[in-house]
Image (cartoon, rainbow, N blue to C red; front, side):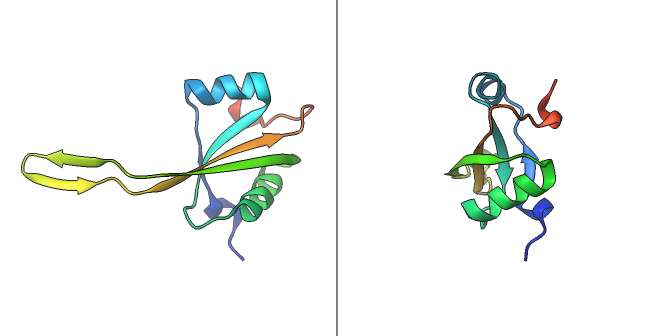
Length: 95
């Protein structure tokens, strides 16, 4: 079994994610690219002690980057949008 902290890489604190948190009680996380929705749900519930209602995942492709004549790519990553129960919050997101 994968440790929950290996699945949840980082919370995403952007303007869009903070608006979603206030309006719809949805939180965004950067998660492991190999994690599925069931693993993400269990990890969120265990780490933050909240009840997850719904999870949407998006696989983001890495952008191509150049520095002079050298070309490369940023790594691919996965974003999870987690909806929790209306009466609960995750205190790490409170600014």
